[in-house]
Length: 478
Ligand code: ADP
Ligand code: MG
Image (cartoon, rainbow, N blue to C red):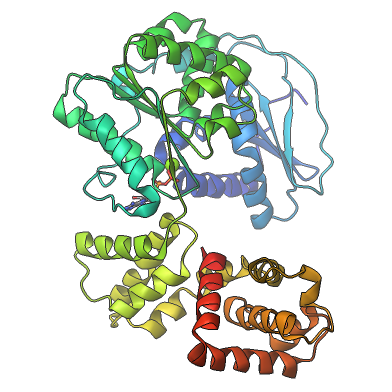
């Protein structure tokens, strides 16, 4: 499969163009230019799209990160295409034997590997010409991610205070490193950008280098390829403040970890501020070397907790204020804060969708409209709470056995919690009464209906029940 002269079928070329356009939107211009633009389609054969990459590094990177997505998109557009293979093919360059074929396939395909080697020459020269300077090395900062626009609440007040301390310190280093961690969409990147912007504004001579761990790896691997690690080290080690976002992506890449560890140590030894973010605590970075893991925890470790209703509502208020949208009624904001509890990114997206819709159709925002516009989002977030989870939480809360949820026993001590669980299943999932009944030991739907009514009544008359139900609901929804 070495020949490169055959060009792809025009229809396939068209599909390839559509996929690239789609990915450009999905990944942004910078990633697209670095990774996908240099690729070309060779042909589609036996359900496999064969794509040429100019370098081995590019092939490896694209295979690991984007090939599965390319295969998925292609398969959606043309079900005959079930897998994608990326090979190193030098077009019009140094003649090279065909390389290792790295495959990324949808589960149905049975792709094979073709072994081979590719000399590290020729094509790298082109990339070499676009080598960046340290200031270009740093990723652009989002001006919206400032301290001013960061709403502080219980879940993030500690991380926020630590970030402020680092940002306000003039040339001193309050704690090193600062390690920020938390789940997706909770504000880690926002705080990182806020620190970087703040330091740059206060003192433009300080060299703040902010980049994702992925980008760090990319630069390092590229330096290795050019045998140019000295320049790489110098660039990184000349930073006054080094900030690496999403460090979990450095996991499991030995040489990168090693280099990261050295860079990190040199900077800390020279009293330069290092700020790292990750999606989990240093000790939970399983694939990371022990010494690096423990070193990451030497400074200050601050975690951002899951959002609370109050924080979500506060953020919504802040967002509508800063965007100048005034006509979002309070009950709609409360509805969003209550129902979109997964993370702040999704909350923002929900608000944007509602306001965009209102502008487009020229309609006032109200609760009905918000529910209508967000139907799919809400259904997706509902799906996350399962009846099993409700049963488990309720059983824990009342300290009864999980099996009592489906048992025949009618003693109040188990029957009441069971009714609470049925009530919550009706409220928090989209399951029908018969479905709920089945999950509770095959009970009839009228039993479920009765339970739901009973708990509704009790919530009015019995403060203890009302409190239990509210607490359970809150923990299940958060
Ligand atoms: P992470 O990096 O933790 O995945 P981000 O920092 O990208 O999350 O945050 C996701 C979105 O939520 C961003 O648009 C960010 O501005 C917003 N956001 C997160 N936390 C806050 C907050 N406390 N106040 C205002 N906006 C926030
Ligand atoms: Mg982030």
